[in-house]
Length: 422
Picture: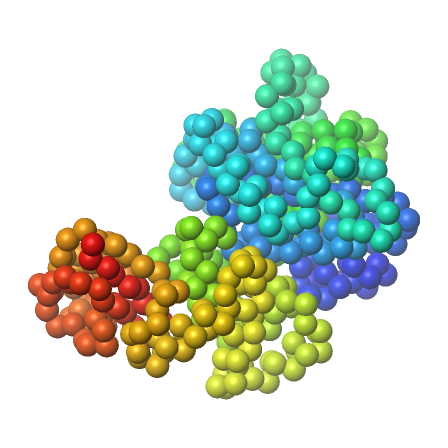
């Protein structure tokens, strides 16, 4: 939360509910939102995978809220910047994607975004005011459309003098890699220049004055704001959101099976619902403020339930809200019925549990690995030794047991899959 009393209703609401982390000039942006000026903002998604994940949900919710308040969104898919990769805290640079893979990822990501954000590219252009009684539709753009046209020598002459290498080296993700003496390619180093150029291009061609993104994008936003000031003498703004983390500081969206995706083909709705149903008690009210439309006072009243059995009802409220937003066609009642059945220890009526098909009878330890309930055969056998694996409610004791027909396999109390032998 930013320590400022915003006069703008939308900024005040966003700050109170935990959406805001940093703003380049809070007071000036507050005045802008209080004015009658048309506000265009943008957020970028690099298509480095076929789906967005739960970490992007905060961005999407912020787009929805700003859009409802009358601001106009531009959604950028980084067809160009994804070919380079943003410097990260990881030990290695991002894997470079083929052009075809980038195109496929963009198509898949935009299909989902169009379910979650109001778009209308045919009848609206950013910067043209919308009637007061409708939500301004978003437009989608691919930065490859303008970055691919850059003449390298002209770009160096026009923008090279405006970027300080000294300042670029102070970026946390860059300085951390350098301190560890790990490779940082010149290709990655160019990412921040191109993102800054994106902002300038949108400022000059679409009247875009605000960039939003995660806290890890803050340095890149500052470079964009500074570039606009240096090239045009005008003011633009950057607004960052906190990273979606648990109360103990870990990034949300990871499970034993891997990333929790927004695409239902990668993370089925039941599994998605279960993820939110099983969050830590201490995270429930924070997540309700971000992902539900419940009143602040009502959400705050749930704080007293942390650590008590009743908090589970509020977790279901949270899981319902997020799942219905991301998967509006999901049958919540069927999902909850399946969850009740699982926790009751029964094995019938499991239509919503993730199903794995195997083509022949297979040993239980191998099945655990194939269904991602265990990372390796060694881990699978360790689970079996600890009596942590059940097949149709019966604890496994032998690695050699064969799964030869349909079975419900569970690890612990919260991880279930249906295995069908074809």
